[in-house]
Every structure is written in C-alpha cells, then in structure tokens.
Amino acid sequence: MKSICVFCGSSDAVHNDYKTAAFQMGATLAQNGIRVVYGGGKTGLMGEVANGALSAGGEVIGVIIPSMNTPALAHTGLTQMEVTPEMRSRKARMHELSDGFIALPGGFGTWDELFETITWAQTGGHEKPVGLLNVKNYYIPLLAAIDHAVAEGFVFNEHRQAISFETDPSKLLESMRNYEHPHEAVKRWMKED
Image (cartoon, rainbow, N blue to C red; front, side, top):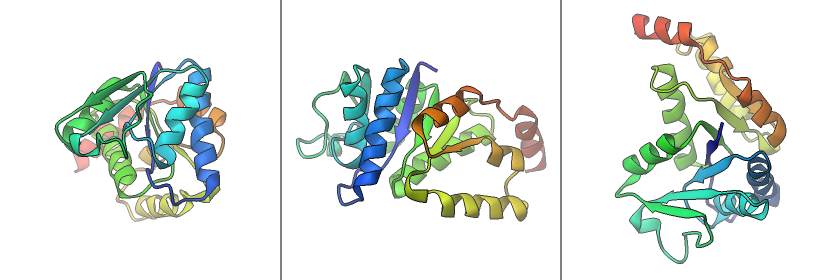
C-alpha cells in the first residue's frame, strides 16, 4: 500500500484522545512510507491526521469541495490540495488515489464514506483493505450493529470479517497489509441478491 485514504471527523469539540489518536495514525502512516489522502480540512481529527503525517515527513493529499476550501476549514500546509466540484467527485477522487481506507471516529460524513467504501468492496468495485481505528471504543456499537446484520442474514460473515479492526495504528496497518479480499463471498452475494 502506497496511499491510504483516511476518513474522520472535522469537529474540534471532541475528546483530546480522539485528536491524539488521529495524529498518531497520520504519523504512523508517514513512518511506514504511506501517503495520506483525506478530505483536506484543518479542523478536528482531519487536521490532526494531516499534521501527524506532515510532522513525520510524510506526503499528504487533500481532496476538498469549493464550499469547504476556505481559510477557516482548509489545511494550507499540505503536499497537494485538489478541489473537486462536489461530494460525489470528491469521494471518487479519494478512492482513485488510494490503495486502502481507514476510518477514524467521525459522524455522518465519515460513515457515508466508510459504508460506500465497504459496499463497493462487497459488490466487487474494489479489492482494497478497509480498517477501523477503534479509539475509546467508538466503533463498538457500529460493529454490534454489523454483527446483528450478519446474524439476521443481511450481511455475509466474510464481508464483516474483511473489515480490519484495531485500537493501535501500527496493528491496524499490519492487519490491512494481510488483507485477503473475499472473492467467493462477492460472487455469492451478487448471485443471491
């Protein structure tokens, strides 16, 4: 993996543990020679991921839409900033630039990006690893919901197991390096639905 896209929240009104973990995630990616691709913001976890990677000498590409490309929101110290017309093209460009995806804690935007990425993998749209960094047990309720969907027959267990889940940035990266795409589950899902 040469580039990883990081999805995460942009709110500053969150616990410092989330910000610290985001900084560490960015630094870990840079220390492993992995370019960070993200939404281009300077606030919240978004800013911390970028700052962590930049502080470790890493390359960071932001992809942002015009309404967010403002002095209050956009990070000005990135390696590269790309501006796309709207959110759909923004997500498509981030996918195009990335070899894998990590979701840190965040809200609706983070979940939208995460679930679109998982759905694309489920339907054979890509074979890239997806990971969750579980800071302060943030993703425990989401995983419980996914496990419930598996138990109720809405999600194949292979697709659930394909999502890497760790509390430590280095362990998450290692898990993603060992990712094996569930090809047979993709074929089975496409036939059944």
